[in-house]
Length: 117
Image (cartoon, rainbow, N blue to C red; front, side, top):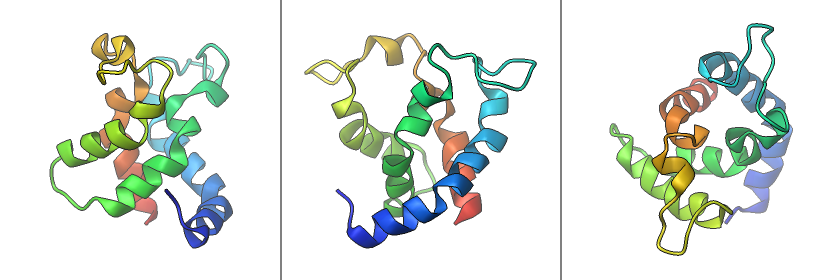
């Protein structure tokens, strides 16, 4: 999915992307506590946004649209299709219950990435 140049560039800038997500997305997350830490079971390492950040950055760079739906389509194809919660038909009980942070915060995530680009 990625080329070596993208991999190197992303890894060199991973901390910047993660910092932007923490600043612009985490503060809106329902799992973010008043103590300004992630209260998601398993911690921030289990956050789907952080776990899939490389794929999301690649999608943000590849899609150029004023609507969120093309980004969502690419997210479904490139990230959700590999998720353990996704069924063969593409449905997802987590997403349908509005419990998937990728879906819930995608516009904020895209904005944070765009601000860095």
